[in-house]
Image (cartoon, rainbow, N blue to C red; front, side, top):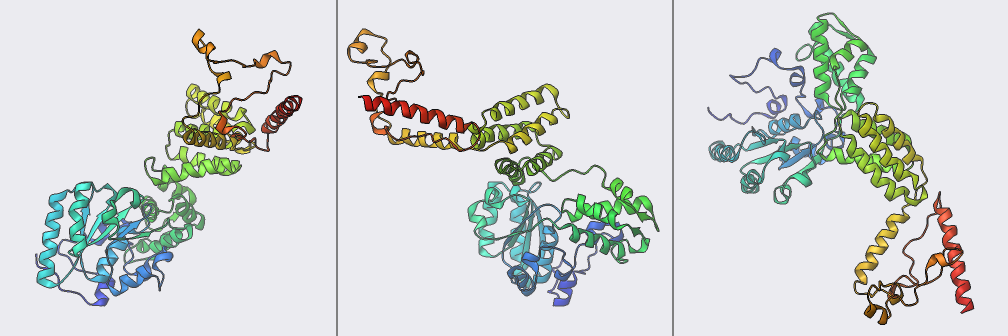
Length: 455
């Protein structure tokens, strides 16, 4: 098939390139038909696409280099990739990181080299789900991206710094696409309802504002999901129908929250839950807990994080917190879902509203640091074990005082090696139960100082 000649700027921006094998417009899904044809039609992503921004300027000039588009589903990554190829008048060649391998890479590169030599026309190699590329595929792309044989445009929902090797990543600029705002998606839905050429305008559908708001809100920032729901509602109602909230809800069916249990968003939401607990915000903690449950998260993941938080961020300010977290986990094992969500919620509220102290964590860090810095310090003789006669003759255990021989169950004596004496590793916090601990430590210090003054 002959290479297409370079098109005019107007043709590049319109995107109306003819094709003998094009799917009829009416047969394509609404989300595909409503793809923006120019940057001015693009909704959202103003932080990278508004006039004057570097990405927009590079696209309009047709001088774009290799880029990685990172963002949630339905935010326009594929659309933007096609627009890059259109504005730059380059051949758009898709590559599936899931189904295609290195032989396909070689074929694409050979075609790109021939295209460049015959017509001077470059190639945009679009790799959807680029985070799924294996090492061999990434290595196969690298020299050709570096040489400029192909311009790489990758789309990913995962953090590229974790999923793409450094050599390939260093040759591409990363642009972050955000979830679309509810107002942006509502505007797209209204545009689709009114558009008679590509949208649903010929059906003369009416739509209640609250119905469109419901679709926009429950699409989780995903334009494709919202437009798919709108198309389903239109098919159900037929020409002249009215989209109400009930019709919108029926079209949305069961909504699945965007929560990838293995990806970055998983860790972001888990982090938000932990930090809400630490920050004493029960509302935030409950929300992120519910987001994880609604997205299919294993409750044991939430319990593990909560148990760790109870020890790290509450600690001795409320020793009951750790017990309650473990009890809530055990209760869930007994009850299962959904009843087991009740102790999970109870635990979440308790941990968020408990007094906070990280003194246990600080003490652990100090103790580990001291142990690393003084690995050879001998155990003081008076607290050594003396199971044999020789050990006793050598002074092991000599001078040790049994605490319970005192009415206070406390006898001042040294337990740290010589190099660490006088360096407290644990400092009690100022809240909750640790105030009682501080009183005890102050009392024992007083007994120690009295003993030293008598000596």
